[in-house]
Image (cartoon, rainbow, N blue to C red):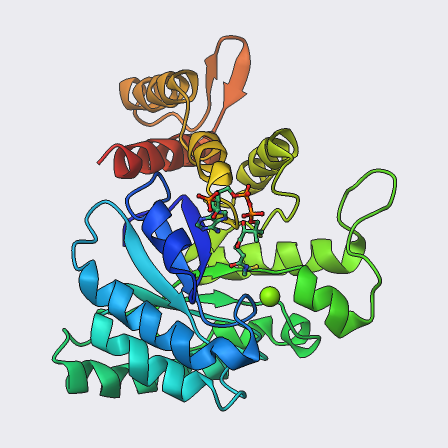
Amino acid sequence: MKIIRSWLFVPGDNERKQEKVRGNEADALILDLEDSVSDDRQDIAREMTAAFLKANPDRSRQELWVRINPLDNPLSLPDLAAVMAGAPDGIVLPKVYSAAEVNTLARYLEILEVREGLEPGSTHILCVATETAASLLTFNTYLDNVSGRLVALTWGGEDLAAALGASDNRHPVTGDYDDPFLLARSLSLATSRAIDVQPVGSVFVDFRDLEGLERECLRDRRSGFIGKIAIHPAQCEVINRAFTPTDEEVAHARKVIDIFEQNPGLGTVGLDGKMLDMPHLKQARNVMALYEQISG
Ligand code: COA
Ligand code: MG
């Protein structure tokens, strides 16, 4: 799957917002049928989202995903049944308890793809893995036989705060996440890497603070995340930039790869006064792979 750096949420019942951001710099839009849509607008959101998908079949510049309601909510199946006619690139699954629901969703998609005449397996899944208390205790379930449709995993600190009874998820002075949320972040990163799906950084809710967003993106990237969820169009440019390797990073990665290629049989070499060994070579290859995928 191609790397998606910025995933922008757009309320599913807001035509103006949908039109405004179609084709902007977000790598993917997530048309939302869940928390940004009020109860009395569920039907209209579903219809509008299906119509938007059908009107925009060319996804080469920007993928179109849909966040459905959680599977334990009776709204979720009508959501899926309505939007699959528009062939979304993927489904965002919120408020999971374990990987079992990812696999249940995968089965539903299998059936709906047949109904719609879509290529089997073409609809991917991004799972919001940490929005219930139980979800923090079930990450191991992803390690055996999760559906190959799952291509990305992210975490959320907002619903998790409510689920844990926390009044806030960040320290009032430093602004850093408190420990249950750092645990959620770490577990979702480790799980993503263990099963080889894209680890996506969580929403940064203070959408006017672009400097804070940039700091958090760079921190996410240092940790190993690729890309981030956005809630406002202004966040996408910052996210794309932060997750694109810089010219210096690419040049350095090339240098590291070259020096190992020029010294076959050596496990450790020196470059600019620093020791390099296998983890550095692996990291350099990761940077080059990310760069090549992003630059197409
Ligand atoms: N998608 C598309 N367009 C958006 C947008 C989004 N997520 N957020 C803002 N815009 C548009 C606005 O409509 C506005 O355009 P307009 O003046 O032509 O109508 C422009 O961008 C500037 O918006 P701004 O005034 O800065 O923000 P706002 O107060 O209108 O909206 C939010 C703030 C948070 C309500 C809005 O960003 C939003 O709806 N975000 C997504 C929420 C969501 O889906 N949450 C669920 C996941 S957690
Ligand atoms: Mg939510």
